[in-house]
Image 1 (tube, helix red, strand yellow):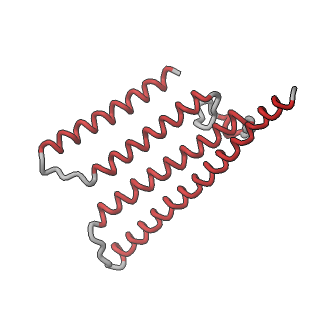
Image 2 (image 1 turned 90 degrees about the horizontal axis):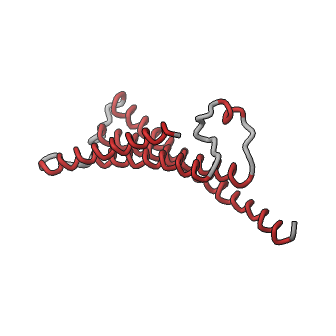
Length: 169
């Protein structure tokens, strides 16, 4: 093997920058979402046991929870991306956890497999973002109700077709 081929093959280790960056981003998102839930839990304690008033606490609580779910989902995207890149370019991860279930989301066999798994999680992030925005819709206009129904229908169809396509593989 010539010098250029060795250089070219060893350039695959640059992917480690993306893997490490993705893992750091994942950790930050997990910590942020956990902090949001801890803050919400403290507010709940204040409202329930200390008698401290928080205006629109219920809507704020739902918003905090949806935001945390969104952050957790994005963190899992980064984890799947990091593991997938590592397995595709560096080497297979020798972990019994990944071998137990053949449907494990972390078992990446090809770039298309990585893309498919990421696409499903990104779709879930979009679904969560849709429902987070629904909290702020005013239903005083019949057109808003129609838009909401159409949005729910489109989200349902996207989930249905994603589930349907997963059965074929």
